[in-house]
Length: 119
Image (tube, helix red, strand yellow):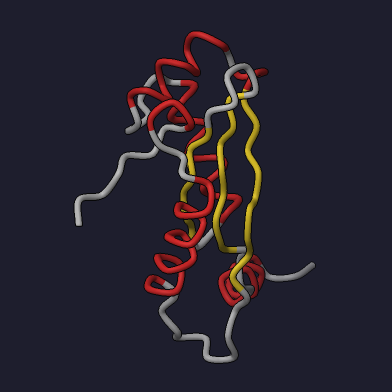
């Protein structure tokens, strides 16, 4: 049997899928666009927050509470490919990729849940 510490080490060294995701309200078509260094974790975290009524985005939370879990989908829009350098910081790359998707989809006001950032 493989040692638990060894399995943990292997898991930590395995690059998790990272990139841009959206949460879609299928009842209204509104979307929330976000970024994450771990998409699976982002999905689980957002879902947990929504189910417990604690999501940071109040408009998304309100609609989730109104329409229910079955009317929402979590979708990956874009993946960020890992680099050879294990210590590379993907923060800026994810910000740029997210900005591209925000410009493309414009998930603001009646189209979405994202807030416009003041320039």
